[in-house]
Amino acid sequence: MKGAVKYRFIANASPAEANGIITIYRAQGWWPQGSRAALNRLIKGSHCFLVAERDGVIIGMGRAISDGAGDAYLQDVAVLKGERGAGAGKAIVAALCRRLKHDGINWIALIAQDGSGPFYAKLGFRPLKNALPMLIKGARV
Ligand SMILES: CC(C)(COP(=O)(O)OP(=O)(O)OC[C@H]1O[C@@H](n2cnc3c(N)ncnc32)[C@H](O)[C@@H]1OP(=O)(O)O)[C@@H](O)C(=O)NCCC(=O)NCCS
Image (cartoon, rainbow, N blue to C red):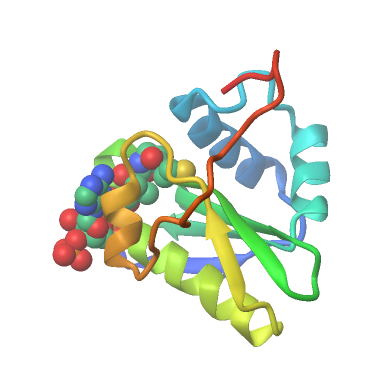
């Protein structure tokens, strides 16, 4: 029987955690060049980084980047394909938002990529009026 999913914030990644997290990044095609050293810089540079773990395997993740005072963006929220549809994504976003609000950060935004708008809408996010996400020319999408 599958164990319960556990959620925890990490301040750096053990070798096993790094493998699990990089596997998720690669599965999404988000960070093909990801390495353990770069991952630990990414985690340290984030306001918070959350992993979802079942039976010792990382099945999902999410993070927030923030100025630490007022504003934050959620980023890199993903759940492994075989684990989707069971509430992990919702729990990751809820935990990130709870943490940010606890830290006094109430302006929480994100870019809903890959058709994930309806998922975030269910969690209380709304399109930002008169706003257009933009990316510098030459950067990977
Ligand atoms: C988006 C994602 C994180 C959702 O994770 P998940 O664990 O499947 O989501 P949950 O099971 O917690 O779903 C929560 C609710 O959102 C709904 N939902 C999930 N994905 C959805 C989608 N793409 N469109 C519409 N609704 C969706 C679920 O049906 C559920 O609804 P309910 O509460 O009424 O039952 C996951 O599909 C994923 O990793 N996608 C690829 C990466 C991605 O697109 N990330 C977000 C963009 S940055």
